[in-house]
Every structure is written in structure tokens, then in C-alpha cells.
Amino acid sequence: MGKPHALEETISMLRHIYLDLDFDEVFNPLFITDEDMFKQWGSETPAILDRVYYLAGLPRPNVGLSKEVKDKISQFVELDERRSRNLERVLQDYKRGNIEGDDFVESISKGLGIGFDSSEKILDLFKEFKELIPVPTNLTLRSHMTSGWFITLQALAGRSELPLKLFSIDRCFRREQREDQTHLRSHFSASCIVMDKELTPELGKEIVTNFAERLGFDKVKFIVKKRSASYYEAGTEHEAFIKLGDWIEIADFGLYSKDVLNKYKIPYDVLNIGQGAERITMIRNKINDIRELIYPQFYKVDFSDQDIAKSVEFIQNINTPDGEKLLKALLETAKQNKDAQSPCEFISYKGEFLGKKIEVKIVEPENNTKLIGPAGFNQIYVYEKAMVGLLPDSKDENSLNIIKNGVDTNISYLEAFFRKVISKIESTKEYGEYEERIPIVRSISDINITLPTYIHQYLRGKGKIDVRGPVFTTVRWNII
Image (cartoon, rainbow, N blue to C red):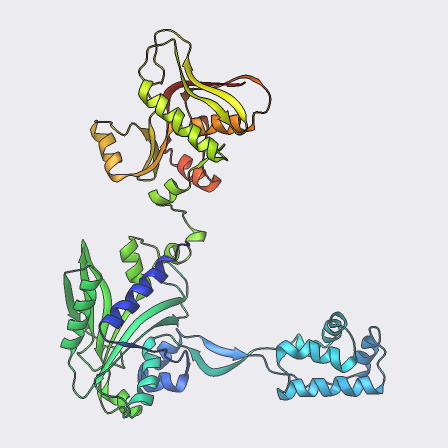
């Protein structure tokens, strides 16, 4: 299953909270006229418009067929009178808006009876299309969700049951002079309104407190803003803060100005609450830079312990059911006889295996040692983005902490090694005796373990792979 973006997880959570609080979801207009901006912001508008994006479009030029252009077109196609008329008609239809831009080349192709490649070459001959300058409109991209709320409420006032409770989570755009760790040119606003005959800011406090509790924050304080935005009633705009070490702002709310509401013929009180979805996501994920949150692919790469543990793979692995049965036999033999004094050998399996007869033994030919080295039953754990090998029954404080709080891959050194051995047994065709030994482990490849390159580089860069340990185990097999 894929992994969602952290911001989308927060947006999904915010949606469910709003729905649980009996708010209905709507989409507000995204394209706002500057006339609406003047209605909402009053004398402040010129300063606010400096932060909005105006929409512009390319004009459709009036293009004629000069002799020079006709001569150039004749290099691609024989331009008789009929084709000339057809091309002029296509150019005029495009000018009038009867042909969409996506269909322009196709229309030239049909009019002249030529292929698309030749049509594109002909279009390239008209300098008028290359010298176009965008013409601005009076439409802006929504910079505040409030800009859309007034338009939505104007449509619903008088034909909706009160109280009306709505929310919208959608993009807003601001023409920031530069993007930094707290500002992007596009952000998601999580905004709600309550419309009723009479409202006070106390309802805003109640909703924000309830919201904060559902987010897991139990301490909320409110501060009245000394200077309210023009679309709020003076003295009603509040900032809401949660206690997270310091006090951190999570919401802004207030009652819409009656003067502005009257301009939109809205006869009721309206409470508006606004939250930045990115800000809440940064708080939840303990990220200080919004750029790193939204575009992690361009910034520091980070992986959780679970990500690292799930990425562990075997270099050589078992491919058959017979191989899996042999693995159980080898692990059982090793477990039962791990402390046997050497020299020693123990048969794990003797019989049919993939249509051939085999005998498989764990051996230790050297004197004064044990069948399995001290690190043989080490398991691989991932803790605080470090990969380490530990015995599951370790008793020292550091190991106990890793075993308790880390992610256990459930892969032991011996299992990984035995999988390599069995893979070789599966592919052995010729009769004879074979042997595979694992000595002191210094790297994960010594155990028959690998990681994706990006994970390996991530861990190595932090110096956080430590699987060293003496395994000293030998497996010997005969194809009989």
C-alpha cells in the first residue's frame, strides 16, 4: 500500500473533524474579481492587491495572408486559391474564438489537406503568434478563503436553514516576494463559517477549543488582535494558540463586518475560522521548514525505522517449498546444538530434495570452540534510524531499550546465512561435497543481507549500521 503525503493526511483528518462537528463541505470560488476585493478590504485593497495574482490571457491576433507568407507556405504545400481561402477561414475562425487552441493545428491540417507536421511548420511562419503579450483581466486567484466565502454566502443567504455551518479546505495563492521556511506562494486554507441571526466570538472559542482537543491539544488560549482585518468587525478578531512548549498559533477567527455583509446582501451574523493546513502538519510532524514539508524530494531525505526495517532483503534466497523445509531443519539443528564443543558435526537433513538425494550438516572442524559462534542468533533491529544486531535475550540496558522500542526485522544472522546456503543447494546439479562458511561479520553483505541503495547511503552517511559479530558457522552438503 502506498504512503500518502503528510499534508494530505492532515487535510483528511481536518475534514473528518469538521464533518464530526456537523459542518457541511463546500468548494468556494477560486477566481475572484478585484471588484470583490475592494468590497471586502475597502481602503486597504491597494496594499492587499499587491499580494494577489492577476489572471492574464493571450489575445487572438488578426492574421492575414501576405505574399511573403504565401511564398513560404508554398515550400510545404501547393497553395492554390481553394487552400488559401480555407486557411484564411481557419485563421478568422480562430480569431473569433470558434476554434480552441488545442484544435488549431488540426484545423489547419484539415483545411489544407496536409499532415500535422506540415501544419505546425506553417503556423510557425506567422510572427503574430510569436509576439503575443498577455493581457491582464480583473480576475485574481483567491488569496484568502474569505474572498470566496462572501460570494458563497451571498448565494445561500435567505434560502438556507439557520444556523448554516460550512467548511472548505482548498488552495489559496499569495504573491510572496520570496518563499522561505514559513511562506509558500500556495497554501491550503482550512476554513469554516457559521451563519446565524446572532453570533458572538465566544462560539469561535468553543469551536476552536473542541477542534484543538480532537487534534490532541488540551491547552488553548485566545488573544484579541489589536487591529482587525477590514472584513472583520472591530474587536472580534482573535488568534488561537496551543501550548506545545511555547504557545503556537493554530487558528484565527472573528465576526465578518456588517458593512461588508450588507454589500453582499447578507442579513445575518457570520463567524469565520481559518487555519493553515500546512502549519498544523508542521506541528504534527515536528518540521520547522514548510518547504521541506511540502517538497521533501528537494530537501533532506528521511526514513522511519519501519521504512528501513521493511526495506531489508536477502541477496540470495530460497526459491522452493523444499528449501523452506530445509531452512526449518537447519535452524532447529543450530538451536539444539549451538553450544556443542568442537570439533563436531550434526546432520540436519538426509533424504530427497528437489528430485535428488542430499545430506546437509552443520559442522565445526576446529578445536576448542562451539558449533555456533556468539553472534549466530543475533537479530537485526532498527532503532532511531540505526541498524544493529543483538541477541533477543540481551540483558544490558542499551540492548533492552533497543529491543523494547525498536523495530525487530525478525531476521537472525543464521537465518539469512542459511537462506544463502539453501539457494546454492537448490542450484547445485553435480554430485559431490560442498561447503559454505560465515566467519566474523563486518557488514550486512556478510550475512546475505542487502538494502536499497538510497537506504544504505542514508544509514552509512549517518554511520548507523553495526552488525559486527563472530558467527563462525559452516554448512556442508553432499549430493549423493
